[in-house]
Length: 177
Image (cartoon, rainbow, N blue to C red; front, side, top):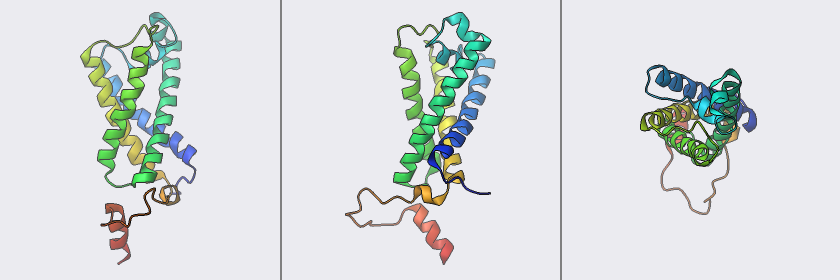
């Protein structure tokens, strides 16, 4: 399989893969009765009334907004991996997902006209788990689908020599010997 060599394309692809994780966890949580409002409804509620947010057009609007945030989040994740490497994907995915999710769910909650913001702990916890799934899937997809050249940046602290190799460098060293 040919690796993706463009950061923007990689952001779109890995962001949409991560969005699939959000949708899966979010829908499962809503159907199980754990969450009162889907991520799409909360996103649409920033722009339209509660009745419209739960309708078909509101769901489409919410999906578009969630897609945009997922792609922007993927762009952030790719830039961070360019700086810190593609090792420890599990941990980086969780941290990235929770961080991006906290920002993306805080913004709709502080908008006074948002009529669909979740106020219960169960819905918000569901969003946290959705964000973890997003972060892990997006991080893993970006690391595996992105071309090596996207992650070959000069270290920002190149004035200090490293004291030990990163796990990514160790794997590369072991593979060549």
